[in-house]
Length: 189
Image (cartoon, rainbow, N blue to C red; front, side):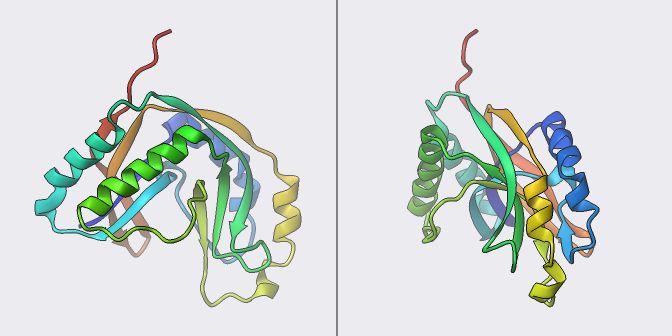
């Protein structure tokens, strides 16, 4: 099974993001767009994992988030890694905050204890909207930077759970399924 750990926006949040990014998604750039219902924030990619490890992973994710209070995640603007002139990933930005950073580090540590290699790149929270086609050159992205500068988006999503996800690769794109949900501590009021 191909697995990862993520935060999933609600259907309403995903719909608002899809509407805000409609012009981008309808642009002629050589990008394979993620379906709006699949947009998520990856905390940790695990890769191929035997199905027999799912109970252990589910338990470990639950332990990693134990005691973490539900919090607000601010999503703002659009961009690309490594750059708008030569994109590999087109994204909606997630403003870093201490709770999100601590949560990601707790997940990273829990997975390291189970033998998964630590991520060496810094954590840059984002919601992937699309992946650039590898064969496309910089000229094919001419004007992308101006389009992204024109688009505005700001929203706040409540984060109430962290999910262990399965990714099934299909010719039409990846399909994601939640296989375990670890709830965060509810906030009163």
